[in-house]
Amino acid sequence: MLSPAEWGIIALSLKISAVAIVLMLPVAFGLAWLLARTRIPGKLLIDALVHLPLVLPPVVTGWLLLLAFGNNGWIGGPLARWLGVSLMFRWTGAALAAAIMALPLMVRAMRISIENVDRRLEGAARTLGASRAYTFWTITLPLAMPGLLAGTVLGFARSLGEFGATITFVSNIPGETRTIPLAIYSALQLPGGENAVTRLALIAVALSLVALALSEWLTRSARRQ
Image (cartoon, rainbow, N blue to C red; front, side, top):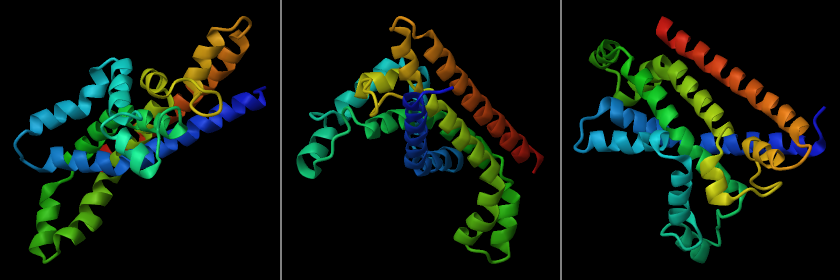
């Protein structure tokens, strides 16, 4: 049985991951559309920057977030001085770190889905007088939706497992930034923490398996269209 503290850790992890995905969803879709449907200078560089968190050590990503969004950072400084908003040592900062780490997987899945939409169907709709907006909402988006959902679920699973960038950026604070991976790390440092590690690890495995299975099902649904 899970303790009340462990239930709190799971609830916090789900909240942080949900906020991370809601925060990053429009950004991920916009970048996926940009990479799939436009020809602009520097597209290769944009693609590389989007996928950079996949290959960078997560600690480096957390350090970069610290430089940018810390209380003295070039973004975090003005937020703290002018709006009184601080992401340091807050669950909102953990959500930002999780969102950044999930972004490459979301963009990749969404881009493939958008690229697989049959452009001839869009062309036929335009020929029949449909506007670009109407064509997007009635043809492009429904056809791409399974892939978009798969990318969203995959990003959610990735954000649940985020560790390195989070602990570097917002530390490991009980009740505020201590998600499941950080709680497992903390329990490993304590004598007799093996039982807590086992319980939390099983929960992490179960959540990840469900998310991956759902993402795979959505991907296969997109392929059958």
